[in-house]
Length: 146
Length: 146
DNA sequence: GGTAAGCCTGTACCCAGGTACCGGATGCAA
DNA sequence: TTGCATCCGGTACCTGGGTACAGGCTTACC
Image (cartoon, rainbow over all chains, first blue to last red; front, side, top):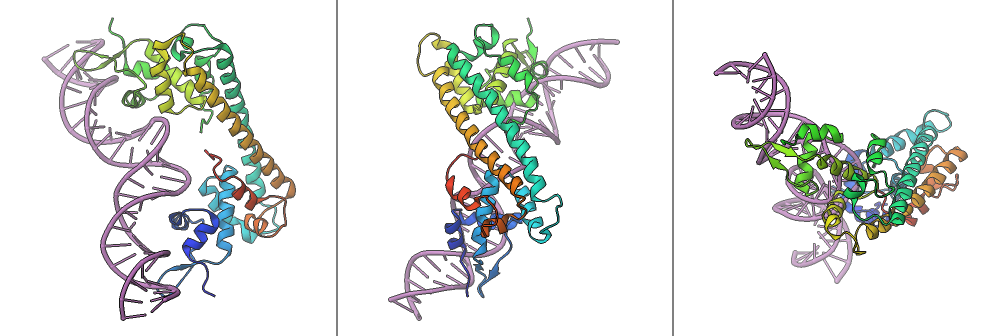
């Protein structure tokens, strides 16, 4: 029962080999057993964990947050404490805010296209087109433009 | 007619002083005149340009794209060539795609909350909750998770 | 003309999330 | 046992968008 080698795990999860070691350093992936010569031998669950990490990243969690989620995830099953539930709710609010933000941006872009505006600085300087460049710049001081 | 000093421009535009020089290096901000001693003296338009840059960033353009827009913007006024118009359309498509993406993510998060799911790996392993973690991971191979 | 604030250049560093390269050791099959 | 693919640890580098610091010059005001 030798376990999976790094490249097998990496391939199965669709990530780079180096990423495995990176995640290990970051505390997202448990240190696996080693062969006598020191090669990593992963259990099959490692692939699942990697897929979960990638999924959680897609849900907008940072690697630190994912590490946290994975660490507190297993051994608190049933306690309705501030676990995945809470965090998912928080993240949902963030994602919804980002959607709203992007919708403003999309309608601004649509306005720019509709107005036939073609020179950014001229438009911002005079009142020649309906795009409130200065307003946008001022109106969103810290709106997390990630 | 001495012009504005760097810190005045930076303050007026709400950016860091260093950012001015950074933008100058990146080609977003024209090199201003200098005083005899070598201090930068900006024209008033510089503030507008900075605001435009910040606005364009908020619209989803990278600094390279903004530099491009500013460079090609001024001296082609009237020609319906691939200028701001084209780029705004392209960017609009990107932004709309990102919104759609985030909406999938939001509904997934809502499903996680609704289902009371609390352990990522367990959920991904068994079929205990309705969140298709593996599917998400597989189903979005290159969906620009910026 | 003195002094403090402001600006200069150049370089280094920050964040996240990886990726690449190196020289050497291992694993495995023929 | 030989030979090649793979893996090891360590370190350096990448993108994007800045920010900080050091050491020295300029400007402005009294």
